[in-house]
Length: 70
Image (spheres, rainbow, N blue to C red):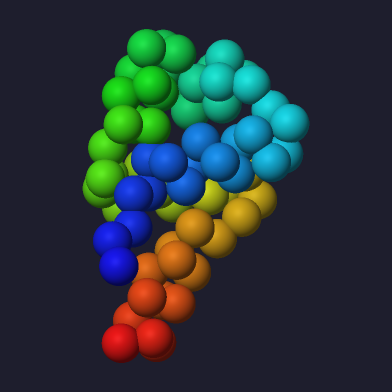
């Protein structure tokens, strides 16, 4: 099983009912750059920490769950 972290971020953002523009502003990037993140299968760890903090969620658990199920 592969994790597509960009899709996971997008799904969490939608689940919370927040917009791309809102998250981009919170991170300090353009909506276009955020769209590029959504398309990535992996991203920088620090960037993921920032996104998790802003969304008040732990997307790192996806990786932990993957390791636990191997």
